Image: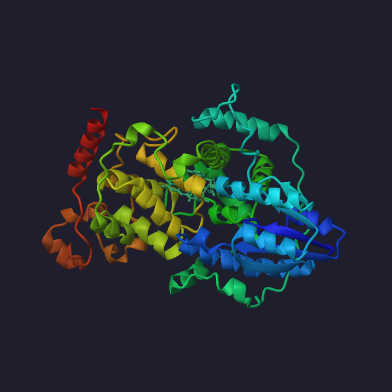
Length: 470
Ligand SMILES: Cc1cc2nc3c(=O)[nH]c(=O)nc-3n(C[C@H](O)[C@H](O)[C@H](O)COP(=O)(O)OP(=O)(O)OC[C@H]3O[C@@H](n4cnc5c(N)ncnc54)[C@H](O)[C@@H]3O)c2cc1C
């Protein structure tokens, strides 16, 4: 049969997509983009089911213009390939490698099957600046320190000549057709519907966001990236995860900036952190479930469902923590500074295992990717590579005062605190009762009292850390 396929994964873009370009240039008349949905892979990624289904609906319209039909199947990947081969469904296939090490294992399996059946395939590089296995120390061992890693990775990237295919940007009819296999991916809860207010998962939108960020925000990124009440960061993370934009495209646009300020350097470094996290997980796949630093294996974590639930619901009594958790639940995204604060609160103030936080973020973040999430959690917990030491404990009161001094972020996500006077913004429990009544904030009723006392929790965390060394 003369038919060519693209095995579509997290690459929902036409421009700068090597597998799609190869399919377009292929001389077979019949062209199909195959998306294999494995329910199991999304079992704990409820919010991402929304982004994925929406991306597929939007992408289907774009593929139509290119006369490529989209086939969405719900099946195990290996089974699906075996079936397609036995039905003689295609004779050529292209794909872009996944960024994730577990998916790379499946890709290797599929390659074997295709080889055994003499079917032509071509795989292209993943949505990373350098092939993940390439950046190693001179002695061939993996990097564990970011600055050393990034020095080599950035230089390697810049040395190569990057050619992009940006030609195939077209207007398309945005009326989305219902496809029952895509509809079946949407999460069952109505929770996802509100994401429509905040996000449009299309390639054009990603490009628009990038252009606006470079025009208006990158110069001041080094300062504004820490202020959660303003749009100081690019918010491109979910688009990067699902490949609506390639990291090459981001670099290309940033490098075109004529007058590069410190914000440019800082932003590029964050792109470097994404590369570093992927490199870490590739070289140490066990870190997905285990401490990278083995000396933490005997740490006495606290198992406490009640406290965990209060954290998830944004009811800890610490305004900056609660605001962050509520932003996450409402929008599927949380500001990086606040991610660090809430994560630190969970692993240090509550001493709950970082894996619990990782799991909750996995289920709620639209930008979840295993590499960044696991590395982010292990960084905060002090169990990871180049991590913040465990004994450096974020004080949620001081963090709030420093990064949300006027309380704009807190008041947005915890509206019950909107009348709170400035001096009590970050420690409402110190408000005198009379004032509480006057401002209609009754602690313990309209807003919770702190679930742990900062000083006590800090001391207990330090003690648990000391015990580890005994
Ligand atoms: C506990 C914890 C969990 C996290 N989980 C995830 C996750 O699942 N997925 C995810 O994409 N990021 C994660 N991060 C990293 C970071 O918070 C987000 O990448 C960032 O907030 C995304 O917003 P942005 O696109 O506006 O970032 P920008 O500041 O605009 O940065 C641009 C891009 O650089 C990358 N980047 C920025 N900061 C980091 C970082 N610290 N580590 C790695 N890459 C970074 C992202 O791809 C981001 O889109 C986590 C951080 C922490 C502390």
